Length: 110
Image (cartoon, rainbow, N blue to C red; front, side, top):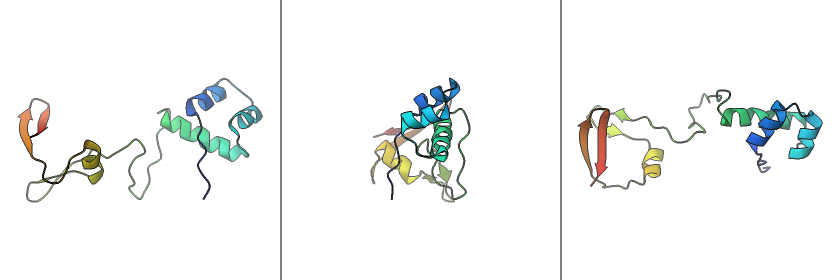
């Protein structure tokens, strides 16, 4: 499988907005086809937030990072996504002090 080419998205978007010729951009970034250039440009625009990201129908995690949604089970337990648990560094058996605040709830690791 081919390794994904690392592209400086900000520089690519800047060159396109400044009206640089397609051939110059392709040479500068090492693209072999205009399709590679267009794909890199679309990805750079999505990363910069200038156009919305395309959502996967398979429910993969967004490229912006970990899902932050928490569900409540039938038993009243809060269910956090595994990726969020790992990102926050929680371990099995960790205990928290929970309290209601003006803006929601606060969990403090004890």
